[in-house]
Length: 87
Image 1 (cartoon, rainbow, N blue to C red):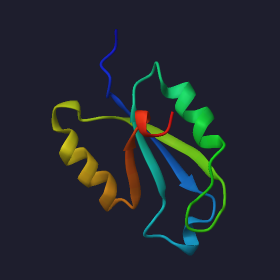
Image 2 (cartoon, one colour):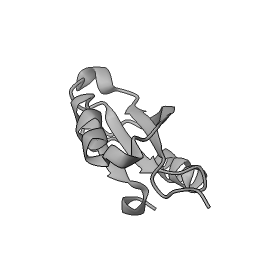
Image 3 (tube, rainbow, N blue to C red):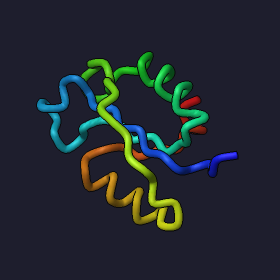
Image 4 (cartoon, helix red, strand yellow):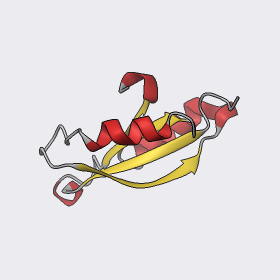
C-alpha cells in the first residue's frame, strides 16, 4: 500500500486575484484518497469571498520533510491541510 502522505493537491479560489495572499488550499493525501479529496473540495467555496475552489494541479510531497513542506506551501499563499481534515 502507498504511503499515507505522498501527494499535494492544489486548489485555487476562482477569485484569488482579489485576495492574492490567500490563493486557496493544498491538501496532503495520496493517490488512493485523491479522488475523494477532489470530490469533496468541488463542493466547497472560498472562506474569504465565497467563490468556488478549482483544482489546479499536484506535486509530490516531501514525505521525510513534511514540516518544511507545510511551511513552503503556506508561503505560496495556500492553506495546507491533511485529507483527514476534510473527508
